[in-house]
Length: 99
Picture 1 (cartoon, helix red, strand yellow):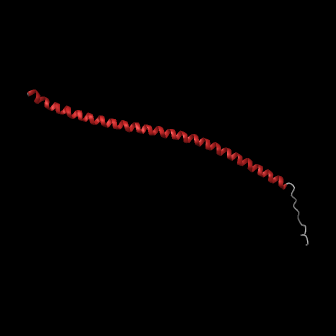
Picture 2 (cartoon, one colour; picture 1 turned 30 degrees about the vertical axis):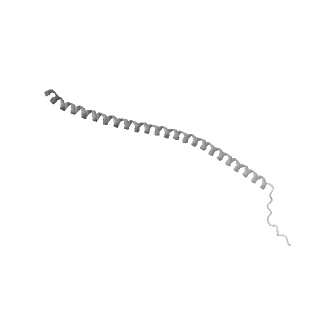
Picture 3 (cartoon, helix red, strand yellow; picture 1 turned 90 degrees about the horizontal axis):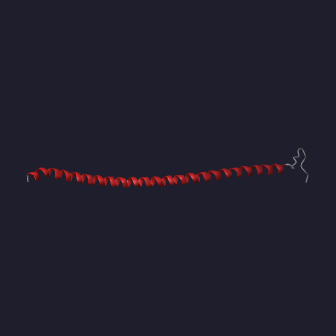
């Protein structure tokens, strides 16, 4: 009985410690789950970023090609306009025809 009286506070402390350890374990499990969720979202974001970067490269190349085509078409148009003006005559100081 004397031993039980002396061990009673120790049993109470052990019980409190077990409860605190249980709470800490629950907290760590919850923290670990959140960490895994954040890691998963980060990986998804990185994959989306890589996809967007690749798409941006493709679109940039397409835009450059379009710019080259527009430049070529403008040069062709200028050439055609020059060719059509080649045979044009400009007459000055001729009186208008009398009708």
